[in-house]
Length: 226
Image 1: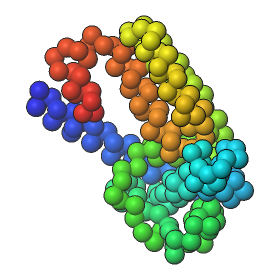
Image 2: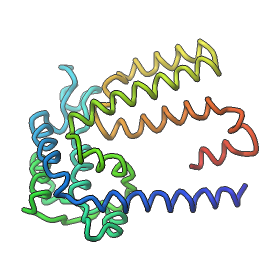
Image 3: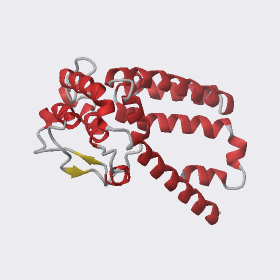
């Protein structure tokens, strides 16, 4: 088991680094137009828009965290194609004087070359870039959210089918009720939320779909480690 865990760790580490290096080979110039359009959308909507009016205001239960989305786009825009390994490990970005209202403007300034990265966001592993940066070649922020909606719907339906088949109707109804209670329908509209929920939902579906495999020979431990 320990040898398999070690092999899993090394394999995933190499895969993650390779993926990050590959997407950091994409130049900022190639995603410039979609970064501009994305910045305009976030600037118009705000960094913490509420989905609909509620008494809690901008810190309400249904506020979307587009501040973090803006930071994700910032890191995508700041990656240096000339030094992809460095960008993959250090995740450079621009924060300036932490003037939050200027964060959307930082996006356009980065891809236009007006400013350069002034710090590194290296205490997180920004694996979402493996998907986000290639998408920015063809789509802007709002279009990416619609893509998120499609994949979230497919993953959720797949998971619900597996829960119904493997665990029964009661578990299926409890799961649906739980997701409705947290207003799951708004999750895909924030890239940060989508990343976390999609991984969780598709993992549940996969673990249930191939339950016999994961129940055997400590494969469940390997899976949860991964």
